[in-house]
Length: 113
Length: 118
Image (cartoon, rainbow over all chains, first blue to last red; front, side, top):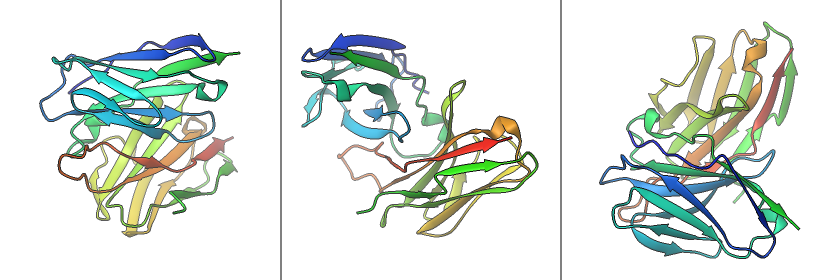
């Protein structure tokens, strides 16, 4: 079971690049890394997913080193609206066991003007 | 697409009453999940279904909780009898079948039902 570890909270300012790192030392060969974003009073929202190297979409980039034991979510030029909780999940998506779907405590990102 | 629909959005009830939460997943999605979120325990998976069949209910806290999915477009989570410690936000999520090589863990969450048991 690939457990993830993230910082509890982070602070930054508008216009800065924010990098949130997630550790997953026991990641399995078939596991993907997925990041979700959750705003207050809303359900989590899928941001990005990757298996190795780098993935980029219109919202963020995801960097995964060769050993895949960690990953870094990069948010370029953040704004106040990026204030949210960010969750890192590791799993093969086969949904063969509910215990594999663990959101953890997430990282509470606060953006200041 | 309307996304995942949950009702009610807010529910206030008294201890001992039955509570029924409802969910309509995104059309065409084969998986449906029920989560509970509290400040103390975070986001916990309670149960999930695949093609209307419950696959794993190991996250259901106790026998007072039950979930059903009578068809592909509707699911319920029932608490009977309810207790104050059941107060939380309950989320429903749905997911399509993972496409080979396209990544897997992609769930679409509803807005949640905020439950308060007095």
